[in-house]
Image (cartoon, rainbow, N blue to C red; front, side):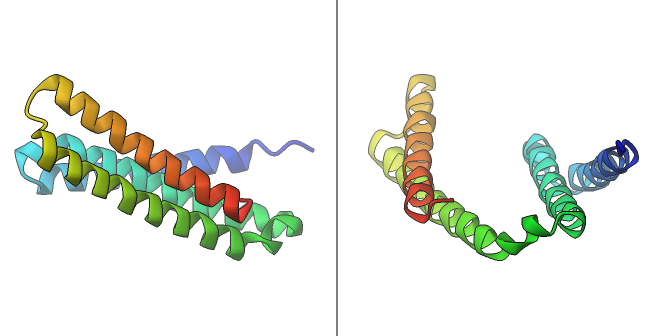
Length: 129
């Protein structure tokens, strides 16, 4: 039997949450941060919806919930470590190069992304996530 109601409700909840957080954040932050606040609102809404969906599906699929705590721990640790590496790379690049022109800013984003991916993938491989 196909279940089309659950995906609809999940999508509806995600969009309502995204709009609620987005409109609130957009109206509360300074003009220079308005666009960034929409990105943060999307990320928060997506993360909350993904977690709620995982819990909902795990109730119906017990195999999914068996390794969930360990998997979440691995992903969280890898993300935090990779974020620290990316921020460190960004700080070093900005202090060294200044990143005041478009090519330097592009180099900054590229090297910061490489640092994030290198650390995240290394930890993911080490943890066998």
